[in-house]
Length: 220
Image (cartoon, rainbow, N blue to C red):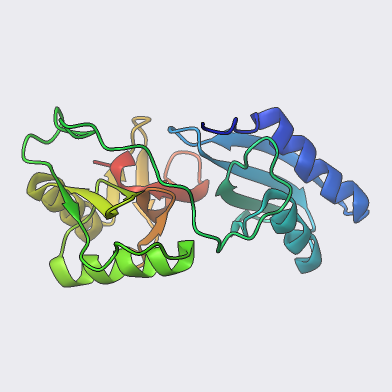
């Protein structure tokens, strides 16, 4: 049975509570979920000390990815916690993800997509170790997973040669049109990393100037 995820309002209340408890001279400017609704970006306005960020990490149960959007503005990117979560250790192994459908998740977009199990991932690992396994497999095979999931028989990755080529083109150009129709500048094409079930990259919207973390599939 899946736990209910916190609403965006509940996430905002948690962060605001931490700011109040630390008498922090900062406010929550916005809280935006990603497309899948499992991660969010919290924008803070004001000065935030390192101990406050640690308290936020403890409150949401995960250390946020921190980015400086512009002067006096900080972005925090982290998984939306379960409604009853109160700061569990992020390195604990996660529950098995739901099975990938027989026709795959992105078969309609990429007809050549297929499900592959990363060798040696049958034994559950912590989130950090699992991410290292995914990155090592990517380096070895040259694939960019459309999505990856932890199942009972190992880490499943959905791959497609068509998708791989599109990702390579985007990273080589360091520029792409996002799923919202806006143009983005890829900040560091060599720095890609796994978050949740996606391979991500940092990018800045050319129109708004706002930087954030995006799944590669947002640009493909």
